[in-house]
Structure formats: structure tokens, C-alpha cells
Image 1: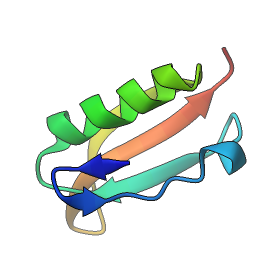
Image 2: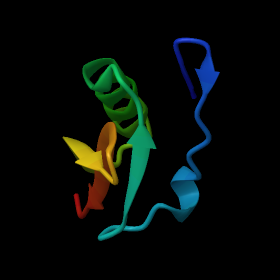
Image 3: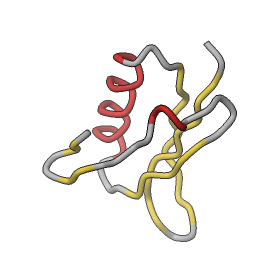
Image 4: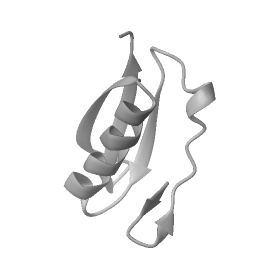
Length: 66
């Protein structure tokens, strides 16, 4: 998946329910849109929250049961 021109490698097949990942980014709304569109395409249910972790702006994405 690419967000703007930056490649973002998410190993969706290893992304199990109950786990999460953090994407450092400034445009969190745009990143969230891309992540949610890809998750929907793969029929995965995710929750995205805009967060600051260790002083970095980004998006935390959790996979939940469908």
C-alpha cells in the first residue's frame, strides 16, 4: 500500500484479531482513510485512533473480530 508516495508494508495475513500496529504520520486522517479502505477490501474489521506515541504523531490500528 502507498500513502502519498511513501510505501507502507503491512503484513495483513499476519495481522491477527487483538493485535495492533502504529503508523507514524502527520496526515493521520489521510492515512486512516487508506488503511480502512485496504482493510475493507480484505474484509477485515479494524479500529483506528489518532494518537501521539513516544512524542510522535501517528495512527494506531487494531484488528478486531468481525
